[in-house]
Length: 101
Image 1: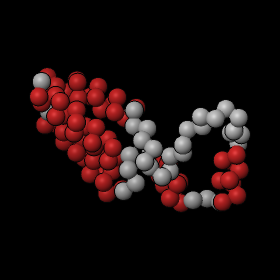
Image 2 (image 1 turned 45 degrees about the vertical axis):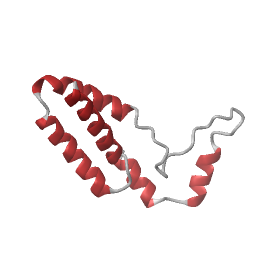
Image 3 (image 1 turned 120 degrees about the vertical axis):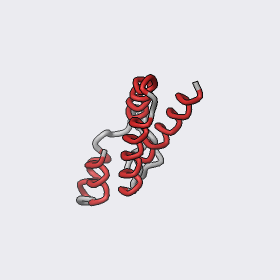
């Protein structure tokens, strides 16, 4: 139905907001997801939860600067990136982003 389609679109948008770098946007998105569930009609809540869980599990958006590119070349050394991170030292923004996810 039309309500289910709108709820799915809003759910996807709010999950994208949770995955972003802004703590304010993530907080507002989480609150919006809770309110969206509370305002959804009782018969659509099961579908809303299914959509929410599928959106969360599929939120591998590479637009986030802390998400690395997938290693598609088989000959690359998997420890190469770890060595670079160790040489660079701790990164507070990266640590904060990992804690939020």
